[in-house]
Image (cartoon, rainbow, N blue to C red; front, side):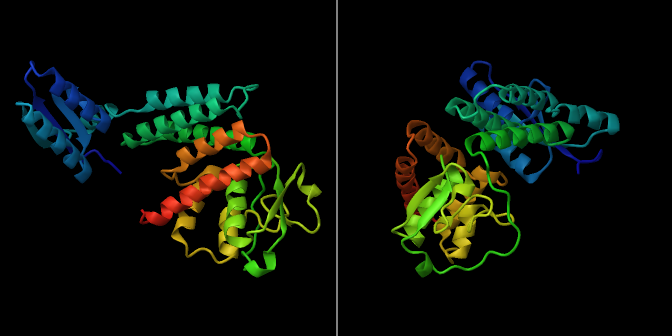
Length: 320
């Protein structure tokens, strides 16, 4: 918590007027850091090791361009001055703009399944992340924008994947791969991220001869089929885990770090939570395939290639 006597760090700079390129480069760097501007040439951040390091880097840029730069630790004289400094970092207007755009995005009668709508929401998510990264005094405006973003993402998930299962309670039961060979695996039609990833996992690691049935309604599941990712299915959400993660745990595949990384992406795209760097890219690729391919078997064949490539990439990379 930042209090009235919390120190600030100020960067005081002077650049030659003739070097417009350097001035623009430094200005962009300071803007990206979210600096408050006390006056022309005086930039402020709440004091921290990261802020000092970042401003030192900008000071070096200034000096390389032939200017002067000084880092100064500053204490507010009193509560009023502290409030004046803090007001330089008020992100309310930026959050209000995001909330307004999200409300427009959620306007009724708009088709959320359109690929352009998903891209628009991704842009708003990145915009929120950029503002939040510069929000040194988070408050109600940030919480409101975060809640609006969560509402929008839930609406998109419902549009792309109606009848998403509710998490079941209880423990994940171990399963033997030998008991699940040559089966028909059934799930809801028009599969999205969790179902596509789960079907890939089943075919790749559990039942190489698996066939898949796409259900209009979960109650249409054949009695001899193995159901997954719908309420009452043999394999579905349990607790905080999505179906892909439940399958990984059930069939003792958790030691594979590449599957764990894919699981983190699937979890985030299916239910939200901790963002994953590769999530937006995978979402866009799968959305493009889903928009292009109407047949679910052909869509799954395309998804197999995508997840095979992702798995191969993660197998070659060290875990982050």
